[in-house]
Image 1 (cartoon, rainbow, N blue to C red):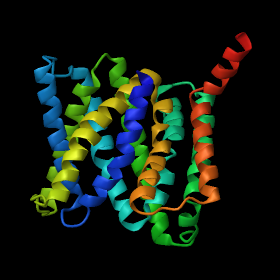
Image 2 (cartoon, rainbow, N blue to C red):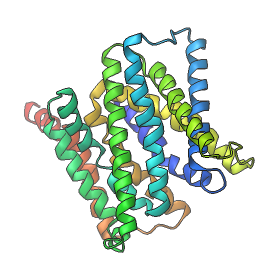
Image 3 (spheres, rainbow, N blue to C red):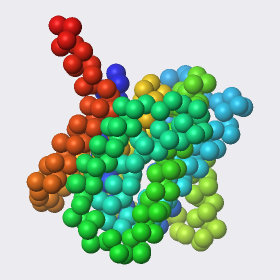
Length: 298
């Protein structure tokens, strides 16, 4: 089950970048994000009603829901939309791939969770691999102050993502279903985005063409309802440190799609990066020890 959730998250979130790219342009980013999570919340509540599951969370969970809504379904996406507007997506991917390390560190600092050497080691290998994949893209931006600002915003977004992971893990330890917590947290994030957009005078009308609406539908159903439910369920089952390693694999899926549709060419350094990322997966999930243990006992 864990492997299925892991693969599902990687495949879905590795392809949502295309849908997000198709949404950029006419409609302001906060409005697009609000449409996405507002509709996703309605779908989740409808599913809960159909399955006859309780919808209202206990009073003790509301502070965590507000935190998750602000961190994971509002600030996180605002930061990354802004960062991708001024920094190449490859650089943003490098910053986002630090999520496993941040989850390990933040979990230790704020929740007293023990550091898992295998998860930290795998994350370091994966981060080096991501740098190898995007080294050429990174090279031309070392002295660019605007790029450094974009990277700082992307890092803030990754911190928000990490905070949302830990809050979800906390609520699941209270026995709460991710479908319930995600629905309410998305609704809270949407409310903040709508209020902020209204205050800024942004138009709420979506772009009524097939590409924008198709991208919105994919982001609502696949990217939000399925993707976040699968990922945060994984957070509850294997911990935020290992679950966040999905973020290191997203760029590989994106590059595979880019190879087919955009003519991306793999260099030797990119192949080395791919091998390091795959090795990082083995280390993060302690698979190397398990393999050698099985051989020794065979």
